[in-house]
Length: 200
Image 1 (tube, one colour):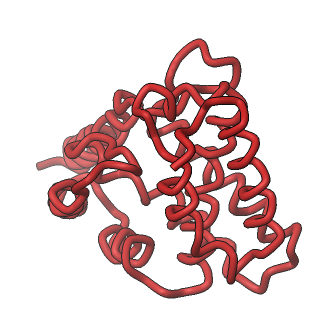
Image 2 (tube, one colour):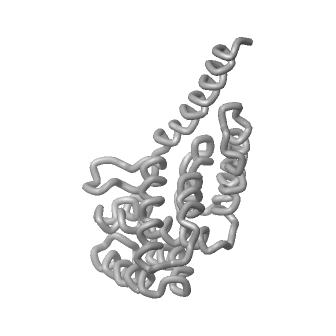
């Protein structure tokens, strides 16, 4: 194979990998974008998460590896390309977890992928206890919550989500970021008062 043909072949593999990643734009989440005209997709959420994590790390002057933090945010929903989005308040999320892990392995094995630690990064954000992974989990809870309260609780009302479910899903934030948890608790009470959450 001539150098030109080899380059073309490599670029075809790389660009095919890019198209695989582009499929994340087709994964629809439960949350609505600001204004409520449509639901957000997982690619939009991943970008939003990366920016929000970076912003909070700077605001609280957290001693984190920002490069690692942003990488974790960018890869955290890649498994949804095959598995789809799983509702936070679904009764069983285990099947989705396995499907997402299989998807990451498929993407990692793609001939156009040059990110050697793709699966390691995904595993870290999924199961890891690093400071970067913990912040990611906090912000990953904040953003859909924020969109819900700015869209009159539409997803909560659609699925008859209860106050106790939302409080439970965000309870771990109290120890890590008391100020943020206080804000969440206040807005949960407001959501109940407005009829967006079931008071139970």
